[in-house]
Amino acid sequence: MTTSSTGRAHDADRGQYTDRAGAPEPIGDRFTARRPVEDDFARVQHGLTHWWGGLGGEAGAQQRRLLVPRLFLQHFTGTSMVVEDAEDPGGPLAAFLIGFLSQDRPDEAYIHFVGVAPEHKRAGIGSALYERFFALARDAGRSRVRCITGPANAASVAYHTRMGFRIEDGDHEVDGVAAKADYDGEGLARVCFVRDL
Image 1 (cartoon, rainbow, N blue to C red):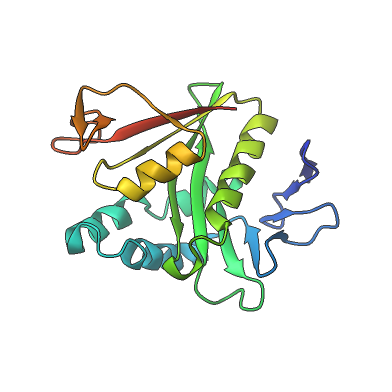
Image 2: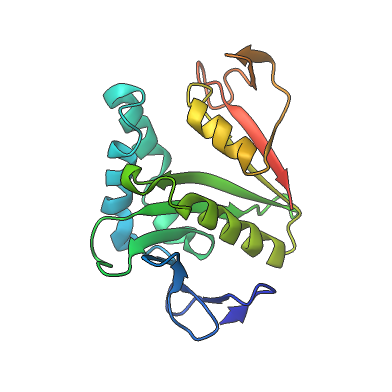
């Protein structure tokens, strides 16, 4: 178990983020955060299908599911988190964050994907996950965090700027937001964010 400068401990053997007392780390009065395990895959995929309000239709849901394959729950669990209702830990997820420390850029960490169930938005869960990831990255000696989103996801663009991310320069604008064309492949423009820690 390692303890961060924030007093949080990360217990790799138990697969949970913990407080000093060793209990799963609470988020508010109702939720707890822990490291994901491979058995969480179906619940993460369910969130990717249903939590975006139909953004992009079925093709958009399939694209989101393909962006978080099982390998993330096999090889990147030490820097990722799932959030559950403390009263129903086997029930539907309330949120998840998939992130990692860059192996090639020793000063950077990357948030790959974050989702919060619609019924739990505005409860502070997403912000709590980001803050926990920022603390984890700082404790690992990282000085910045990067992430991306699609330019059509205006809510995500607004959220990330509120969380202190700045939008990097792009090669064109979509609805007044700088984006990079073909960033994730042909026709897949992305808004690129960076946040200094």
